Length: 326
Ligand code: HPA
Ligand code: ZN
Image (cartoon, rainbow, N blue to C red; front, side, top):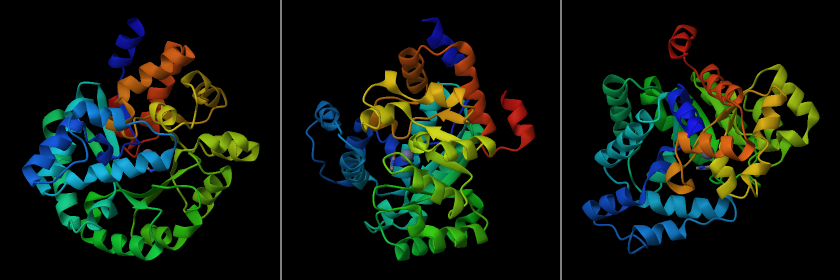
């Protein structure tokens, strides 16, 4: 339809994507085979049948199990390259993506194996596909502060390859304040900061992310709408929210995409963007997310364009680079 073609045509940036969340079942079986690892499923359709979640934790359990097939630098390279090829076809011109080192270092995979594979693919993507990128190292908030500090330490030799630190995994009962000291140190080391907040957790976690972790963007942030003062602050400072429509639907943050608040967020002048989060698990990459939300909310071309423009505005490209993407 014309709205699909319109979405395919506009330049976009993806700002909320976990590289581990791009592990398609076909690739999972290929890695399992070459690494001699057993997966809990017989075939691809069995895997897809298992991807039904009632909340964030049910997803995370399956997502961390999936990551067990990632062993070698080549695996991380191939995973990242497969994602780059996908977004290239969707007119995504710039990406700022997360990786979760602790998911791998806790299994005995060296930090350098993970980052070397991802970095090499991103460099090739920039060179051969023209996709610019930034890399965000995300701490797992269900683990303790000491583990996050250790991860920060491991990242320091690779500082030039990493733009920002983030915070993801089980949100409830793991408030941003748990990582205030780690984020302070990260800022001292020159990293920008972002955090998942207000996906399942309360609006107070968004305040903490802003005030204690000094974040540049909020990942998700849906629950800001419960706090009028917070919305005012986010609007005034134009703090970007990286919204993930299909993720919100699959993790029951919203019960129906027709109830998704992104249109009213736009109307409130919140700097909202559309992203895919974990596309292999939630059933769609960037354009599928744009198309699903545009259809459900009957978005106008103007609203769709505003969302895409917001993604470039909210990125960490410099102003000249942003101009080129418009
Ligand atoms: N929320 C928290 N942790 C995550 C997510 C998410 O949406 N995706 C991958 N890890
Ligand atoms: Zn996420």
